[in-house]
Length: 543
Image (cartoon, rainbow, N blue to C red; front, side, top):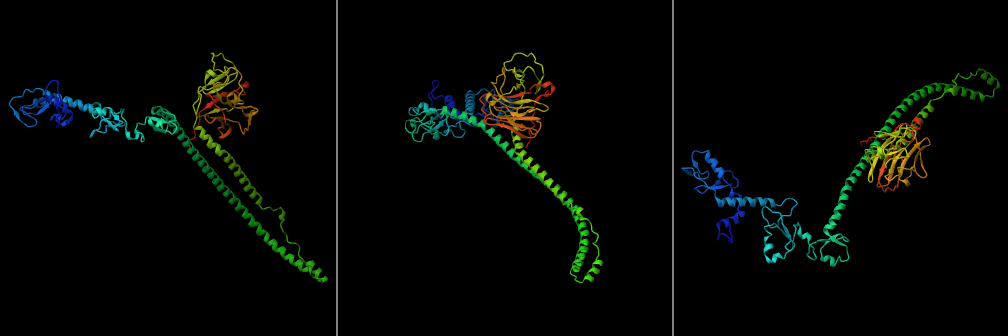
């Protein structure tokens, strides 16, 4: 053990002070009890010179008749009266404290290690920009004591110090050039980057961290979009395969029908041919006799032969006989027309069906807000209809007072959302989305200019409310309408959920404030329009 000489204020060359000063360089074995194998606790020394924890040696001797040293087996005639070894006890205490401190300062993942430590590395307390080395508290001591080292610039611990220094000026990269997007030192701002906007690294770090947060939030949305696109592509492929299967089945059924009809037609053809061939033969023979007689110049022979000429053979009236080829052709033509119609319907339906499935993935759960409902309306869960009688309700600035309508509790100011409303058995209704600032006290003009994007239906047909209204085709009575909004893209689309086709899309919309889903069941008209508008759960089709 290497000992250094220290000046002690209490003892000259004090052995205790020297020992305590050197204890931190000893290993745990030097301070371990051979019985419990742990660091000494109240150590005592036997006459033979061996050290044990007082508790350990006492327990051993309590269990023995004879009192021996556990290490050398020296026998003591009487049980020794043991006293605490003060010197060893203080060394053990110091060692235990030193070990605890070392463990506390051991480098952990993410911390900067001391470049001077060997074996177990302690975490750095400071980094020196002159030495380009990081030091733990112990190895940093010369920088606080030696005059030349005191001039070095110490900073909070940093890893990869070489990368943090300017290669040109050998100074710490503490600033950031926004023009060239690089880290610079103070001297760089006086030459190459003199006219560029310069900010501290911390300030740029905060800006970039905020940008990273936006990217981090955006990436999951982009991933979800691409997953939905994959599902959309797979669904389109599935539908195409289903259509091919349907066509193949139709082809097999068609071939079967055609073969059966062909078999029947072939039998009829063969029977008719068999019947016609003998008649053709008889008629051919008669034709020969007539031709031969027509060339005779002997009057007597001609008259005698003509008299014996046989009459025409009995034949069938073939003008009334019809081969079933026309029926056969009509069957083929009818089947082909039916196939063409089916294919056209599927072709029109295919892209819209995939599109509806895509937007249904953005379905939201909505609840009607009773504080906004017109006093004549009756709310029943997610349904609303005209009660025909104006109720006295508590005053609410949110309530519509002139229009029989209601909005939901939920509002949306970004992203995409989709919901479906049942309109079955209604003769008049209106639904869509409206902006938050829409007037609740006056009459409402439903146009995009006033902040309303709505679909309206009554006895005159279906329209998208605009100035002028956009009239839309209505192939059959609507039962459920889907509404999709892409706030950021400025898009509002309406779908016929049952037919799975797009009704209308309003593009290029400008949304500058939150949007509320809007339902207007219209007047009950004496019971003819008493059915409710109902916000329905969306059946999200699994791709």
